[in-house]
Image (cartoon, rainbow, N blue to C red; front, side, top):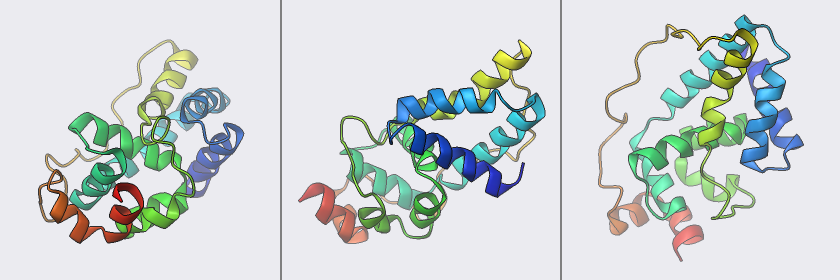
Amino acid sequence: MDETEFWEIVDETRAAAGGDVEDQADLLVERLMRLDPDGVLDFARHFEARYNRAYLWDLRGAASIILGGASDDSFDYFRCWLIGQGREVFEGALHDPDRLATLLDDFDEEADGDGEDLGYAADEAYEQLTGTQMPDLALPPAPAEPLGTPFDPEDDSVLADRFPALWERFRS
């Protein structure tokens, strides 16, 4: 599976779910079960590589503004959700997290920002296909701390200065 096919599967399931992340996760499991186990492993590698790429201080700050705070777990689930939004939103957010203010058309505080189930979709599909747990993906380990320049993601003045567009949209 190449990167284009990975994003096509993400986009296909998001569109079919009408943007509902829980439905998207269910549809993703169903879609992945149409692949062979190696295809599911390929998808999982693509997902995990992007998940690790999104482990950035600036994205943690953006998540803190959007979610009204971001614990370690909520930041993990936010990164899964961000992948589920598709390539344009994901890559745009990595390039400039403040652009999420314009990249996210609609944002429902009750339903958006938490993609925990998306993070487990490949594991679930693999287990249903093979009856076994997914093996190690043989990817480089995730960094121990977010990459980039550390800052306090709970400091409102720092967040407002670093992410003015997000601050205006989500905190004003």
